[in-house]
Length: 150
Image 1 (cartoon, rainbow, N blue to C red):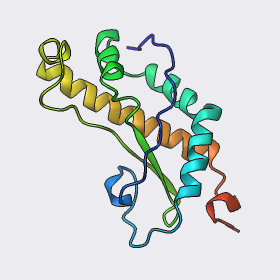
Image 2 (image 1 turned 60 degrees about the vertical axis):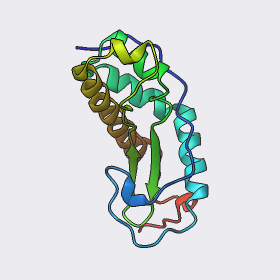
Image 3 (image 1 turned 135 degrees about the vertical axis):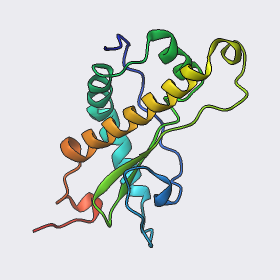
């Protein structure tokens, strides 16, 4: 199944949390100057990583148009967050969870199964975009990320 949806704007990256709070990121003991990397990730998202990942995700998601519209209207798509883990060389993501008490009209319209489907699909979207960032946009030899891999 696929979702026919217009590509939304990339999420706005908020101030980073502890790296261990992101999925697909190995735990890191030290945090070193991640602000520049977050700016670079935001640029990569704007330059096409978000669109590439989103289109790839829509080809495989089982969300329907109503569920996706709910996720967008509730700000969940924009709440996705990404983090570059310098020590492990990976890009992690954090997908938001639906609140128990949703504002109207969503509280009554979304069944428990819809909620679970939306959360799982957002997790898959985060993972897909994270993989696109890692594999197609982030040059691991780039000094922008402090790497000089030989």
